[in-house]
Length: 315
Length: 243
Image (cartoon, rainbow over all chains, first blue to last red; front, side):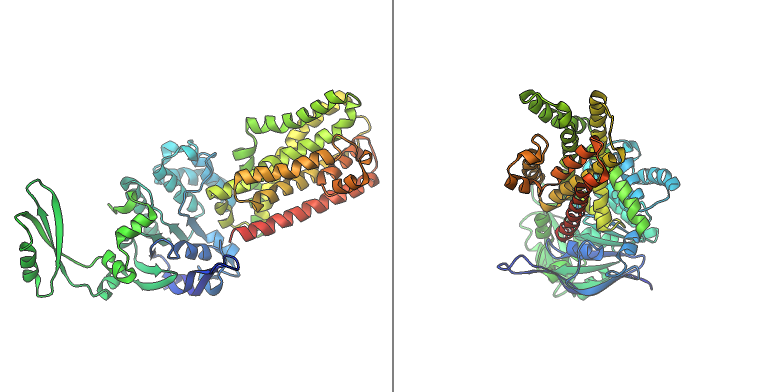
């Protein structure tokens, strides 16, 4: 299998003057991203996700270690690498003063897309990202979701083989986030390798072929989502949904130490007169794995980020 | 790689001109400010208005090239769009040269308007045209590079405006625009020699009076050195700040 990214001992240390301690944002990480896969890079705020993207895209130079991107040495072949990658940063950063169409054209001009191909390709991307009606609207006047979609479209104008997406759905409403996830899935179907950082566990679970979990600059786990689940060795859990007389619902869980039946009995003894609406067995989720690996809950991670809208991976 | 750089420079300049420079307030500000200064001076000292033309042209290039140039990069860094350019297959010096080119194109366009008005009023007889073009080009390069350096040296747009004015205003009053250099005390003349505007005014004065190339050689050389030093300083500073 061809490798899209190979990283060995990659390290980034930020020094903050003489009197302040230096920060190891990325701490000797090793990983490989296979061509054509969606690779999730998961971690809490400040874990080193964006720093890793900045290193792999040449925006920042590593303190130690080496990396190759699309078979090219990051240190020696950066200009060639830049021609074959697309980057979507965490903030939508196109030009407010230019229209949606002109922003795409400018991106194509920078990447050397032949003049004859620019207009049709821009129109096609606008249609594909459902921005056809906003063709002549300045970027400043687009909604947050549209800005995000256009920023992703601008990263694809030169048909890159590898796309870095840094927190693509953060801060989006549920529908926009859902649309964007569909677009990311389409990229994989087209054979584009996607390097996706996210703090939405459900998003990683739905989209990613493999996931690396990074905490404090170090990769603490790397596997398929199924692999991570099984390695977490979580016990099966029974989840019971209860409702009181006023219709307020509560979910309660019990681990199946002595079998499913005893877990159900245990939960039934705690109903306090409430109605049982549903009983389910719950497999360990990526969230469970993440909590086990990082000691952080998904809620803590989301509140750190201040993101909410895209949190529910509804599609 | 060179083709990528040249293409990047051209389109970055074009984008900047469309997005930032050719806006009505910018154009009027670029033309009116130097006129206002010169008019104020002429009313106070009604004398040989013709003698003020080189200073008027130099001031117009100075403000036309550096006003927006000093803001553009820091603004784009603030909103994140500079990162788009840094990620493109264009090397850092070419990226910055594109920025310079945008500022120069705008500054020279505005100066052309002022030049046409001045030559219509005072006549163009005896002008050394080639020297004039070279003096205008080198002045625009030096002032745009100065603006670019200001823009990469600070972190906020407000700081860029403050720093740009901190440099431009002393330069304006000591650079021979209003008062001929040789009428200043010697020590002040030495200070004036530290500013690119001084050489710009002298080169333009030589060109408009039909002087020979040798008269302006030192001024042109000084402007070229200022351009190169300020450009390299800006590239180096931006490289450090993007980390």
